[in-house]
Image (tube, rainbow, N blue to C red; front, side, top):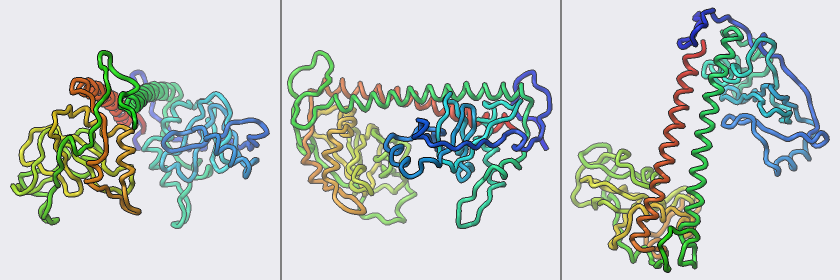
Length: 407
């Protein structure tokens, strides 16, 4: 059996040794009534780890199970025996004791074992593979890894000093990931706030926030007064798709992208009877499983030939001079989305009338102000994209190290 990892810090040469997790951890069990001892109720999720419960949940749940909670002390580990195979395990780094469901397992490391190292290892792909081997339970219920089973799992670990080095490395990497995540979330919140305040609300003719130098009321138009609609592909069968020299804009491309992605296209044969899309066209989805996704818009900002639109959406071509970036962000702003969602009709599947959509009223400033607003949100989106790319890079880096820094 291999006893050293692919990537290792300089100065460490000792072979890693095989140990059962029962030699690394000891189970802890302390029950508590959170109401009597005034301890916060927390939960454990695969996505967020150890996390606080909402106040509403605290009050309602305590009525039923006042004495069925378990204490998690600082520097203790907690895992969900039913979901540990998904990575539901965490280390309490809150510097306070919290209360969790009595169903969870709590444990702590014995002497000469580094918490930071095992906080990473317990969630690593190598550990999750081992949990699946030791999970017990019938076919009709989810398999579980209770502490006696966990204790029997064998793994190869380094000496304490190397554990510490690895643990600190991943702790720093995790801190960097959290920092980029916070920056990204902050930018998204800033964008959300500006989308609320940089477009006039119903009955208003000016926005709450406006760039210096712009005055006067915005004009009100129906969408139909700004351009005309056209249909997507028609007369096609399933066999017509997936081949050919032409491309078509897919439904998901429109749903997921404010600006239509020219790389996310389907293949189809060239057909001169179909409507070709042009630079500045706006696409709308016509149906969805939820009213929130009906009438989602996307702007085509490419000059490619032989491009068509899928049959589950329709196109809109402005006849007036407008800033496409302004239109892109305005049509996805909260005040417009509310108007569009009110037009959604259906029960299990929601549809929207093209005629009714063309009747909704929107606010339009001068072309110069449109351009200023469009460029502002465009730059904000670019910052969000850059921040997202940095976050993704560090996540990929962590994933690669998790594969290569453990045996």
